Image 1 (tube, rainbow, N blue to C red):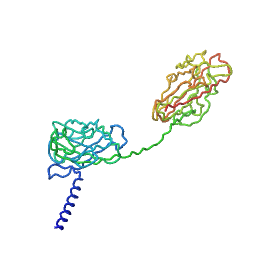
Image 2 (image 1 turned 180 degrees about the vertical axis):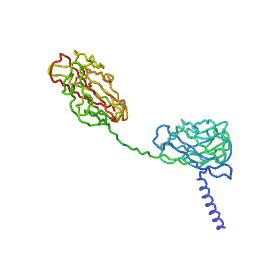
Image 3 (image 1 turned 60 degrees about the horizontal axis):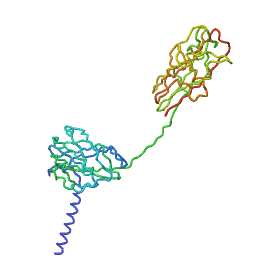
Image 4 (image 1 turned 120 degrees about the vertical axis):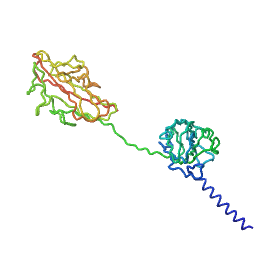
Length: 396
């Protein structure tokens, strides 16, 4: 008798172990005994960080239905345990309070579904009174938006149930999922939160700026070479009847300066000009172009008119856009000189002549600063000079 008793106990233990093993399976199984588990079955998280402080994660849910029916409700219950029809404890920090649904493909997107959070925002309930037609092996594909991930690091689970009646969703109970209506398919998915990896790389502020002179207006880039700008005829002598600045002829001293500019400044770069003043020889000076406020003035041919000024042509090519200041974007035959801001080497600003709206690379054709001067019949003799400084300031 004792041998029989021991044998029965042994059978009992084996049976119990078998029940425990079967209870751990997470197949997406139809209530039909002949149906197989539905695969693939997955939830793709747009963010798996457990540090997410706000409801910004999207969960794309996909599963295959195992039979043909009209689906009117879907439950996605998020739990710390994967076992179906048992008590579901919400993962720490998880919330679906702000959930919305995006139906990705047919048949889910053939109707408009209503998404709501129940069970203290642990469970997502989807309902559609008209329902959608599921056939065997149909893939349901939808995204649950604005989910807040669990704050606890590690694995958590989603239990999925489908119903052919809205009541199955509205009366859902974790330990008795058939309370409102008998569910059709069920299954589970394991998910996990994890640590994030922060990759840091520094990009330093950059500003490339050079001032140089050249006969050629193209194909020259920083740093270039610098020499003085000589105005007048081939001997550097001004005329009283024409504006004198040397033409762009190979081998001839240039009459303009070039500005090479490139920067990653988000707010762009402003180039300002300062000078020692107008052309000066001892106590003698040459009158400037314009009214003195920095306005473009046409070059004069009158014998009694003195003029000194410059204009600016923005560079072209590269990325980003250069813009010449309105006071100096005069074009051919006109020049300007601001007697208030430009001739002040101690000023903190100077006079703006060129700018960019944001990051830019050095252009193919650099910005040109063209100088001009004209004497009058009464201009006193002498060697007249003026020194210019150009300053680039980036806004980062």
